[in-house]
Length: 134
Image (cartoon, rainbow, N blue to C red; front, side, top):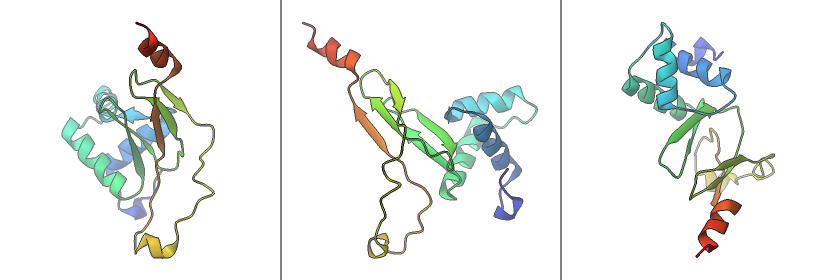
């Protein structure tokens, strides 16, 4: 649970709790449905507004799929993916190659780093074979 000292609203805390309880990334729509099924419902626009605020605070990360869908996860869950741009198949990478990298202070130019994302996009084997078929 995120500390109330961080100034997190109860709505934001509910979203964080749902994301932390799920092993998978969740879309705003999925979070909205989960909340509606509980006694803690909130509107879809409110879900997205609060996710955006949590992202700005470095507590939630988002991943954009080639379909345009956005998936959310707690920032502490450091997972990265390889995604097919044709069928959308996604594979999780076993390690993060960015952990050994650092950004020199002079290139950060005053930025406060909150989190990073790393996504690779390509064509899976099935889509490559489908493209080769006459």
